[in-house]
Image 1 (tube, rainbow over the protein chains, first blue to last red):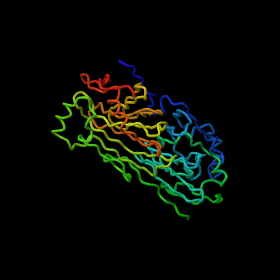
Image 2: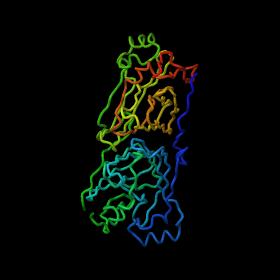
Image 3: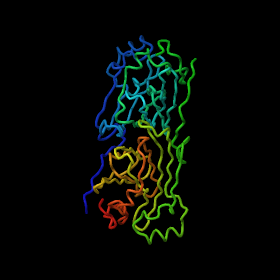
Length: 193
Length: 193
């Protein structure tokens, strides 16, 4: 019989993705400047600067146009002041590249924003697929009590611009805890582009 | 407060994908010529020509380069002769476009083949992500007793060439039932490209 090869064994496990090509972790100390309440951040930083807030396992076969990067993002629950744990967020360096996030566990938001400050939000529950359209800044927010786990897929040539949020003083809306429910409120530090 | 919009509500349910932009179904009669055992196919066709063998729900926001199509494929269990239910299979019209399949339920194979007849296979179980590399013909096969359900994602400008398999007399390997276990065997009708 002619030769048969096996494809890569990519399996979603509680620890992440098997046979990933990379993993990065973001600890609390890495998220300096992300949360609106600087005092609350400093207080938590004194206690648990090294705590991993989220980690991302990826399978990146190449960075060629037409190829895809997939992986798993795991974002822990918690707050800084009244603001929920979130990822740094980015826009794709190639602005027209879109992204898919399929929620496997937890309760969260895909918080998106156009360049002219229009907010778009998709609430994530297990089974929900969030679609990030072209030219949308996006970040994940964990508004629940357990890990928010999503499988993502995006074009391999997309690239990331992580500075776009900081340059505007943050995203236009903050995702905050309001008596046990999530709510979006205007970010007082936001500066229109 | 400034306006906040909601993204599309794409939810994976037992019925498929909510707010899909399209669905197609393939009934047994649509799969004429796909299976190697023509006699076994004719016998089943006489009984259940209209039976849906698989259906695909998709969310296709555009066909632009950089955009993504996602959706759910549901492939029923069963056999034609000793050959398991499978999808027609295709190669992307733009050959370098890749694809991701994330298995949610069932037991299957992502059966892949290069243009020079090298077979690559990924066994699908819940939690497995199959990666279809550039320039690989690919089809799903259900080797289990329940529906094989996968979430897929591929570049919106990929396109499909469904004729490539038929032009070679089928894929090089058939996925068959061998005393209750799946096995690949050489397809006697295969003609090298």
